[in-house]
Amino acid sequence: MSNALPNSMQARDVEYLLHAVTNARRHEERGPIVIERGQGIRVFDDEGREYIEGMAGLWSVAVGFGEKRLADAAYRQLQKLPYYHSFSHKSNEPAILLAERLVGMTPERLRKVFFTNSGSEANDTAIKLVWYFNNARGHHAKKTFIARQGAYHGITIASGSLTGLPTNHRDFDLPIIPVKHVTCPHHYRYADPGESEEAFSTRLADELEATILEAGPETIAAFIGEPLMGAGGVMPPPEGYWQKIQAVCHKYDVLLVIDEVINGFGRLGTPFGCNYYGIDPDVLVLSKQITSSYQPLAAVLISDEIYQGIADNSAKIGTLGHGFTAGAHPVACAVANENLDIIEERGLVENARVVGEHLQRELRRRFADHPLVGEVRGVGLIAAIELVADKAAKRRFDPVGKLGLAVFDAAHEQGVIIRAIGDQIAFCPPLIITEKEVDEMLDRFARAFDQATAGLN
Ligand code: PLP
Image (cartoon, rainbow, N blue to C red; front, side, top):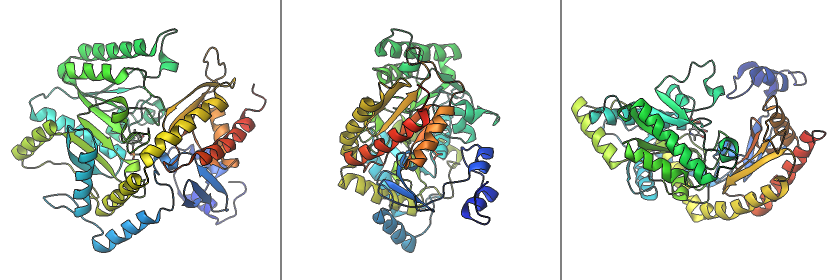
């Protein structure tokens, strides 16, 4: 790193830390932004610069930074019972209360909760529980998952296999588990010219059915999807998509696993993405906003039918041989309970709906007509703008991602943190954000956008 003082945090970071989802050589050149503290929708680096966190960390800090109630809840629980687990009949009160609460607030058929530490582990758990259940009911060949191209479901061996993004597979030898990736439900990019959203949905449901029939329904275990795709580029599904997909899944006894790691707890302006799109899952995966990411925690909810199969099988084998040392962690669960109290008391789901409408409107008003913007999209407090080289032809830049990276860097300079997924620029601010703060975020972003695109149009 050219300009870091020896022994500075920046220099020591470059010396010792291997960063997630980062170009390691580029990192050696430019070094880290060391975030020191946060308050509300803002974070501050160790040089005193202030940023609006337009991504809520990693789509996750619902109640904002510096929320003392969560720190207090963690401290109280650390003093009372800092750790316990859920193996061999042990339990703890925060985990029990949280499980009860999650069952109460999610779709009707979901009856039991299994806790993990991350969304990836939760999706691995979902895969394993589906396999275990299918083996329990004698459907030994029913193993393959169907996911979507462009989807993000995590990075472990199994969840990373479900992920449909080349950069998460390449040179990691993934996918490994049996998985088929079907067309990404992104109308702007993948619909045929003139094809309506409904017609596109019908085509994707037909593709799903053909995929199931080709492999044999007796081999297809589950379909997994986010209600609205997040980390793959913020893609709301086309009209009628989930109704048609669910119908195909039911027809062939293909379980529906819904990954609400990003959508869950108000992001779309409804409690869950399932509520927004009318989805009735067999398995539901939650994480991130469950604790506002103040503690690592994820949850897998399963239907009673799946639970009964698993319970019978565990009795036959002698145990359900699956669990994590830090699963159902009392401190994480206590923080989650307090976090969900705050979301409820402050009406943050409704805030996401109302302020989300403002965000969506303003993004479109300010950027939709720009010659380098192909599409502005999103629901509630999650949105993206897609940068294109040719608006009429929807042609991508070559190479993809170079302009996205320039916008990302310029945004830092202007004091706003966004995410560049190739040339798709994502926004996902904390649920506490106000309309005035949205305007401030977009003012900063507009300056960054002008800076990065100067001379390009
Ligand atoms: N599923 C979805 C939809 C996600 O967005 C993510 C992470 O962004 C994951 C799963 C994986 O979660 P984690 O990073 O906690 O493993």
